[in-house]
Length: 604
Image (tube, rainbow, N blue to C red):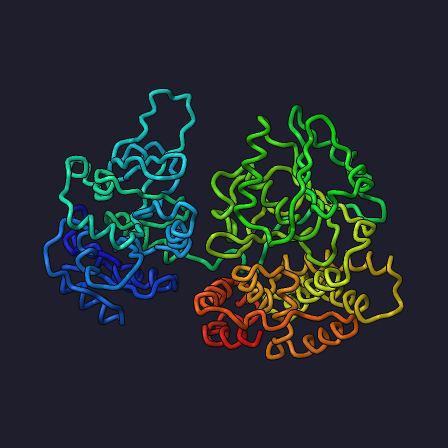
């Protein structure tokens, strides 16, 4: 529900002002609709002009029957006789409303304390004292569980002691209500705190309702003044495609890498140059090594260094990263000298994510996306013990969050040091070896067939592709040669997609991983066998490799999906825009529709 009053006090008629060729209210409606998060989107208004404009643009509008003092009352009247569970209030003057922020405010209703929540809202970090002291900027303070304590136009808390570090938060005008909460609001009279501050959500606090706040640091422009409108028009005019799809990419590479049988034993001397006083090295190690004393004795723990065993039964989660960071910060006063990940792709991703989140505030879920990380990560080292994932060279760390599966893709994600020791991959079970190898093969296929391909990524992709064919189809290689070559295929495949992108199989595998918890390499294989339409020659080659190695790809995993699960799977896959653009070009949405993905998933 988007409440829309024509006669705004600070900027009358602002919702009908032109924003890059369309009225502000139409831009806001389209932004909310484009998130694909809602069963229905309505504008609720007291204005015939706004009502007619929304309907003329193909939208849905509701005329208020009564006079209302605030947007919540206007929404309550509109939903009183509707059969709904959650009602989201998006402000009409926020045309840059994003899916990311709305996902976060909806996600709190899936958290363990959801039964305590009457409504949820968003807040964003603010640092400029001019903004903190501006009465037009509503501030919020929260308790330890992020439940709102109070909202004010004044700076809260007041910084009497300037030496105490304090993070201030601005309230963003997006709410998600349980229907009963908004109906209670509608029927309860305004009290003095709300009246004096002119902040409607204070009414909920005054009557004992619980407001859960989520943090979102996405930025846009709220249209409160004519100056804001000028800024918004300029922003839309200057808006460029996401940097990840730029023709010329200035991405960092891993600065140091050592390769060779036995090079793992160089770890101690490599780390000694990075040791900070009283600051430990934290080793995140796949728990498959927990009882391998011979291997663990090769990790030289010194002083207060700590080894943490990590389960890789499931794909890495943002909550798992947050728990590890919290555990490390609780135990050590000083920021670690470094994070060392030893294991497969899951451990590689966790090591990269933990190193980022030890420095950057908030939850790992806040950074799922492209170039959201602003602070340099802690020194981090990757030591793969399974070849094929390409995680050791990747610019991303793929995590399952509360609302999506997506990577933290940034300049600060790549490892500072990688140790490639083929000896460490001895004894990997055949199926795991095959799935990770095929992950590398599919990386190459999608890079080499993508629209982002250039000579740089092509040279790496072709080499990795040829190595995969040699490893999985040629009988002349020794086991030792296969281990070394697959490790290099993984490296080259990772380099290829770092400067290009993956495609259809990865986008759909993310959907499987989010809904069913399917491991990444397995998920790619499950999907790839049905992608003849996109990669016919390589799917045939893939099936030949599967048959040669006697690997049985899981079948019918989508057989008993509920409609809700299927819808979630499709939504996650459709959200991987750069992958679809690489696979099919800028007009990919004409090929990959909701119905097309549904058809493909049901084949599985």
